[in-house]
Amino acid sequence: MSPSNTTMSIYTEPALLDGRSRRANAALQNPAVARCCQAWRRAYQEYAENDASEIGARGWACKAYRNAMPVLSGEKNIHDFMACVTHGLLIGAIQEERASKLLYAVQVALSMFGRDKKQKKPQETHPLPTPEGYISPVTSAESVKP
Image (cartoon, rainbow, N blue to C red; front, top):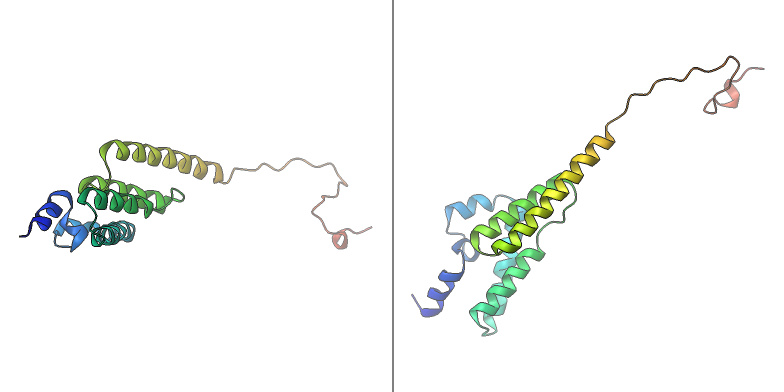
C-alpha cells in the first residue's frame, strides 16, 4: 500500500471511495445519502488530483457532502437530511459539533412539520342557524325563485 493510500484510509471511509464496506452499501440505498457520498467522493478526487494536501481535500469534500444534503422541507426531506447527517457523522464527513447543530435543526423542522400537520387537520364546522328568507351568498341567482 502506498503512503498516499495509507493516509487516505486513515481519513476516509472506504465506502466513499469505492463502496467496499457492507454497512456503507446499506446506507447508500438511501438516494440522499448516496448523493452526499458521491459529492464527497467527486470533490475529494478533484481536489486530490490538483496535488493538494490531504487535509485540504478532505475539508473540501466534507463541504461538498454538506452542500448535497436535502433541504429541511417536507417529511421525506427531513428524514433524508437526518440520514445524511448521521451517516456523515459515522464516516467523518461531518464533525460532532456540527452534527449536533444539524440534528437540532432537524428536531426544530420536525416539530414545525408536526404543528403544520395539526393545523391542516379539517376542523369540525357547525352550521349556523339562518333566519327564514335569508339568501346565502353562495346561492346562485338562478336558484333563487321570486
